[in-house]
Length: 363
Image 1 (cartoon, rainbow, N blue to C red):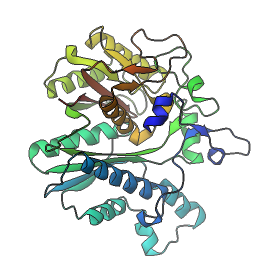
Image 2 (image 1 turned 30 degrees about the horizontal axis):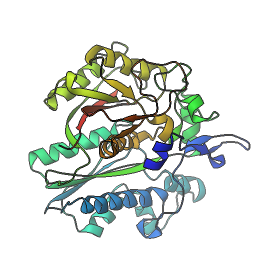
Image 3 (image 1 turned 90 degrees about the vertical axis):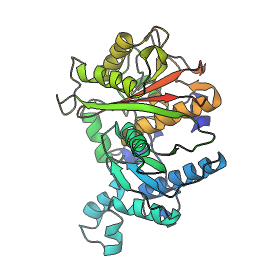
Image 4 (image 1 turned 90 degrees about the horizontal axis):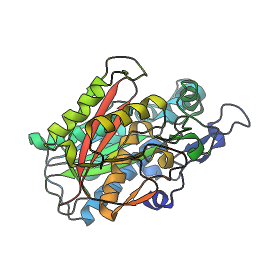
């Protein structure tokens, strides 16, 4: 992931099997085959457990020792779409009981908890594209309330099928027939929407970390209660969500150096976040979105973008995409040396879900 981000080249490639008709050209950043069959029968289960395992191993190399109560949170919007598609389309609703259980959202979580012998609470979190931020906020709430000693948080979205891709195109937000940097230009002229992506991303959160990548200081969520797809043009709830996140984190807007934006490249989302940037934050606060590079990973989008901030703190470089057209004056252009300070990570989910999380570099 980091090598790809540092290259400045989008992860999306042409994926012929995602077209509805022969000859369709579909650009997407899709997770391929090649997982461990022991982790489950699907790309979804294999990706979820592989990313969680990688996070645990990495945390161990940085000094983490699991406590008695390790909880699991899994951010997911559409789970096991490949298996459900096969269940209905190919097998006509007929499966052995063992195979049917693989469709259940509890199964990958149960198998993961068994693998490590963890006994804390385990549950799914879902807030559309804001699910990753929702999971981080929930994990911090568990830790602060003393419900757990540690949390493994995973966000998985491997939902790209020809049908799902086609409907996002029909909604007018996904662009599949153009190269990523031609289609998706957040906060720049000529942006037409986002390129679709998939990801599974995992974190270990703990009050006992010795060499953390970043600190989660706080966050907030709200809901527009306005429309099933569109943002309330008054922006009252989005603005309040940002302000509440700063209050929850006990920091001021002046402390924020970067806005790691939802930034899908759609007109209404980009306009909303640009307006919040200009209204709430100082001139020194700069903005970027990595969706041109990673694709829009749906329920895992904010998690992969939080991971970018954490890894940027660790490496000292923000892997912003290259600017390819006239854009916002505070938009980062390509690889940028990290200037220190806080990052606020926003994520705006379909249906009115607003979220913002405040992240800080290690002390």
